[in-house]
Length: 94
Image 1 (cartoon, one colour):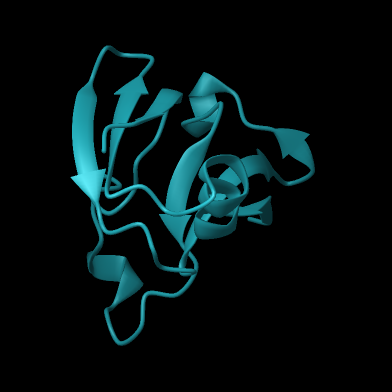
Image 2: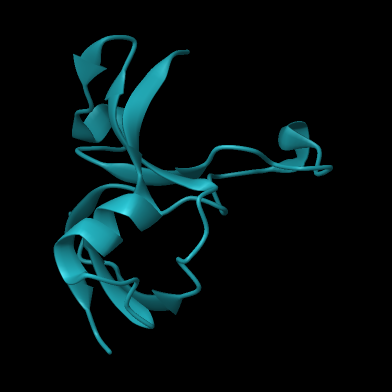
C-alpha cells in the first residue's frame, strides 16, 4: 500500500502559526476526541492511498498515521488503535 499526505505538524504551523496545545477531532461516525502532543513530525495526514483519494471505505477522507513505528512491532497494532481516522473536522481547542 502506498500513501500520500502532509506532515501534520507542518500543516498546523502553516495554518495556526504554531502547533496548538490541543486539537478536537470529529469523525464521520460522530466520534469526538481531544488530543495534544502533535508537535511531532512523525504524524502524517494521509489524503491518498495507491494514487486515489481516500474514501470512507479506506478510513478516509483523511486519517492521521505514524510515519515510523520505531521499535514497536507493526503486526501487534490492532484495529488502528494508533491512528485517528475517518476525520471530518479538526479544531484547535487551546
